[in-house]
Length: 179
Image (cartoon, rainbow, N blue to C red):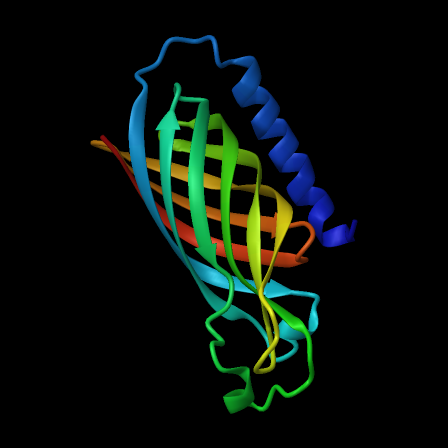
């Protein structure tokens, strides 16, 4: 594991563990929707020119203030025709991830908290040249970040995630609304 992910793993473990250990506390459950915008970057050849924009959607169930379960999707690349961008070598590009995650939140102060998340999903990989077949890989995810609740059901999240097998990092800002 690279040194840059060790602090993320520590924060994720702490927040995730604290969320699970305090899950018995009473809180109002509810469904939420989330929209994310950010960037995806990785160590594979698909990202040799830098990061790609990343958009995502989430639907989750907040069990209580500390624990949530979420289904989510993230776009990891918007390069649809790599030959137009001078990419003629053959490799696979992580295109889209669809997954399920459990998220634990540790409150820091009124409205502020840190979160950690762990999940599993499928990442669609597309060929970088015409005629390459599509593949999907089962990808574990790990993430952490900072959350700020605005009240009235609204919250902002600033986070980072790692998609294990596809070796992609996603950095994002999310807006959530809980019903």
